[in-house]
Amino acid sequence: MNRDKYVAYVSTYTSGNKSSCGIRIYDVDMENGRFKEKDQVEITNSSYVTISHNQKFLYSITDFGVESYKILKDGSLEALNHASINGMRGCYLSTDYDDRFLFVAGYHDAKLTALRVNEDGTIGEITDEIFHKGLGSIAERNFRPHISCVKMTRDNRFLCAADLGMDHIVIYELDHVTGKLHQVDIVRSEQESAPRHLKFSKDGQYMYAVHELKNYIDVYRYYVDQKHNTPEFEKIQTISTLNDYHAGGSAASALNISNDFKYLCSSNAGDNSVVLYSIDQKTGLLTKILCLPVSGDYPKDATLFPDNKHLVSLNHESNTMTFFTVDLKKGTIVMNGKEMNVDQPNCVIFHKLTEE
Image (cartoon, rainbow, N blue to C red):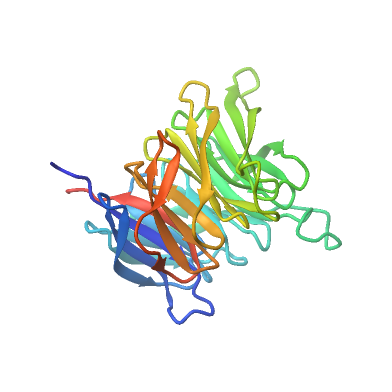
């Protein structure tokens, strides 16, 4: 039986830790739902990593800006180059669907940076820089801009920038020649809800936005108004990331869609739980399957394995990864072996190895 082979990339903070390796690479044991460490990459404070849509390159946040890597046949990483984002360290990054531009979200300085990406995967010059504006220095965390996520619509036309300080998602049109961004809309969330991460359905018709402070996911139907050629986002559902009984002071964190686009996964810090939903393929609506403890502190990221039979939770404050066997029909997760130690993990991405 020919089983697909995967590696997992885990980004971590390095400040205050003994290790200077901010990215760890694991071989994925799909059958047993476990990771086995394969390699470590020296990089400072890898807040977030992303893989290009052509699956050839990995990009990471670092203290110095952004770094690019070529993904080798066995899943190892070969450093290509790094580039400055001309600002404070970013918290999230993603490419457009043609892999021609890289977008970086700045939490600390509320700066959105667009950079050109070359054919060989290296990062080129900055093409645009935008600062989100807020209510000024009188405000605390809320009402001050903090860009937490940048994601293109699947038709590759508009960049959505979630601002969890200002409680809205700013929509920009991308000029694919110049790399400039032009604001065309704002999708407003409930006050002090803090939209954190965004994901799109496979067909691109639905956008999912997890809200950190009010612990829910908003589902939007996305389409382009043909008459005015403008993006439209129509809210069709709001669903909690928590059970009716839960720990106070919880904050929603992760947002991941399964490989087959049938399930959505989120997590709750404080409550220290993971939540799984099924996605209705016709309507885009979510149905909660389970919300259960992760046996760790502050699950910053959590996601299903590509087989949908296992789950990993990255527990940032307890410096662990915990693994579970998942039964989606019964709505259960069962811890699967002992926790793995990893300092301050931030995010995890599975990558399928190719035979080429």
